[in-house]
Length: 439
Image (cartoon, one colour):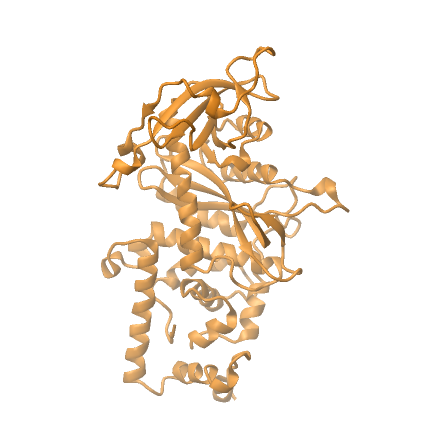
């Protein structure tokens, strides 16, 4: 990637957040540069300087990263007994609320999920050994993210996050579990102005305690259940608990409404599912739950997934639709990691970790909601987030090449050539030409 001018639209994104960092190294110019680090899919400040001739020095951008403090002085967002109050995310959330002022549970839901961010080095913020979805383990950060999902467009937007932490044996009373962090994210969303939308989560959040805490917030909660979860259809102690495959084996299977699940697809034959629903009781709880078992084929003996909801009046179709919509947050994670270098900046401090989450989130929200306003959709056309990002990059490269041909003595071009000197590979790029010009 080569750039000697700011990409189209980056300045407009930075305009929304530049006033959050007064009297710091996080100036408007440095904020634009760091936004470009993620927009260009780069992974370090050195790579940014070797790609962008208009950026400031390594030392100044490093200080800007250290000045990315988005919390109050007496609250860094890690105390489980205090609200999060992330100023940057509150500003990003404001643009979502402005775009959808009449948000309701018919069109939107909350989605809660965690994502792994591999890191190497024990001094990075929030690192530890974590389990991943495939049953293995990784070393790095685990980030819990709350998003809203537009059920009409199947688009997810991030509205809050927390770095989960491993248990400190020397200070166990201050440890925050993933369930507690999820509740804190929901409370923050409600405080920021979101209505009490339904919540969908995977089986990691399917505990009875989590469901009870969510109910206290007047939020309807749908969660996936693990396949080994015990349940029964009668609260009597004489009735034995059974697994989902056994308890649903004689239940009628209902065909799902594929148009509702996959509104944009033309060939839906392979996407048709079947479900059975019952009111059941879980172990260690006297409360009845609506449980839905979903099958790939009508004659399948075992469901491929089971979902639970605390409201027994909700239909199985509705519960399955929410669980299906939860996958939009997985698509969001994929776009962030593949296209916007989410979490890649190798900074050990908490400020750097926050920056490597907040800036990709801000870019993603702007690309989703303000394509026409910030990036001129007429110029770039329609397409996925990845396609739009590639077009923005290519347009910037084309402009850079035009400047190089028309004005080969451009000051930013000289600076870029100096930073890309082959003798400085594996070394920090320096601003020798700019220093000579200012001398």
